[in-house]
Length: 200
Length: 378
View (cartoon, rainbow over the protein chains, first blue to last red):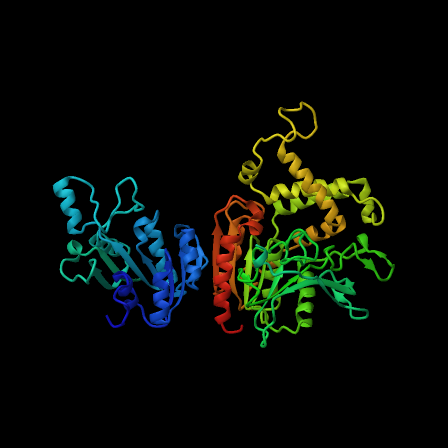
């Protein structure tokens, strides 16, 4: 990676900060406590704003001096004009959405590029659990039981690529990571998280 | 509490628009002289960059913080304004202005008309939120302030904050708009009309000419009872009063007061008679009902000259100024490329939340203002 971020920072954040150009206008959908936005402002001098549904997380964002809106991404982005942002980020949020397809297409409308970070539900550990234990997988990275998971969508890196192709979305860049490093060999098997840069 | 208070404060008065320089109101009618009551807390810094203008709600006054001498209760936003509070008087110079048309020290229908030597009554011209803002602008000029770090208010105060940034875009670095909207809706107008009718149908109202005689107490009290219902939520009322009886063990089977909620509303109504002027209430509710910022263009273009940063706060259980109405102008602001943070605080307190949900609001306001200090002037 070309930038020098504290190595204790979450790896997916480091990769995303690395992917985004200096000085970009960024919208982070599901920005959580604003950590990623803060990193983008600090290391890439981005102009950033976020949308987040959780009230506590919004308070954390405001405490970091960020500009954020409290709301539901599923209800749309119709206040924003086409290509208003250089980047729209959907990190760790797609799998919890009611209408992920609409969200991606809306993100691609208001953003010149979209960065999507998704968990890989077909990681080898998950596959082993399904195959040998005959159970829906619960792993360190996907720690939820079927009855308490916030996730609504279960898909793999491969599924996502097929989705992009079917929706004529161009993947300009893709990175895959496990818990400690980037994964280049068989990412759909060995990566916990896939990060894609999309364009339409 | 006491050690955090700003301490003893006094209301000050600023008079302008003396003859022949009367102020032309939005209606075209001229009014003067005009007095605006205001209070200040904290010190204006050397480059005059730390001033914040606070607006009160419908029946509020300039006394937002600290204590008046011999008073029992502090100002209406004392939890928010003071040393180390959200509007930190150690850092900021806070100006709280009573609005034009009020009866709390500023010129309004209860004031003496210098031409007749008698209270204006209904000869007072109908005023608008815009007229209030123009009058405050004169006050800010008088105080020698070129740019406000922030303008802030809830409910009617929020409307004023929005109009400030539209009318004086070069003077407003940031806007804090709480529990407010960009236009009064049919329901809000309807509720106000019921309140006005309650006053105007009281025989003591005398077409507004009741000064020196009996005030329209029954009408005012009824009006305030209706108002108070709209300031609370169904849930907060139920939590506070439930079906509790007052002063009796079982139902009276008559039309005396049975329930605690009835007693509460009556108490609120009666105390309102003591502290407010009926005509003033008519004028201020009218000003609110006339309010629609989009009447200067459509909502998406009305902020075109605005450069302010925004913090917009709404409350989940507020049904008088519901959160979706705040979102409407938030969308217009975002569409215009402005820097807007929007937060919906989860609360049962209804519209009153802006006066009581101090902790959440304090957190938001404190950090927002800290950021504003570092933003360049607009």
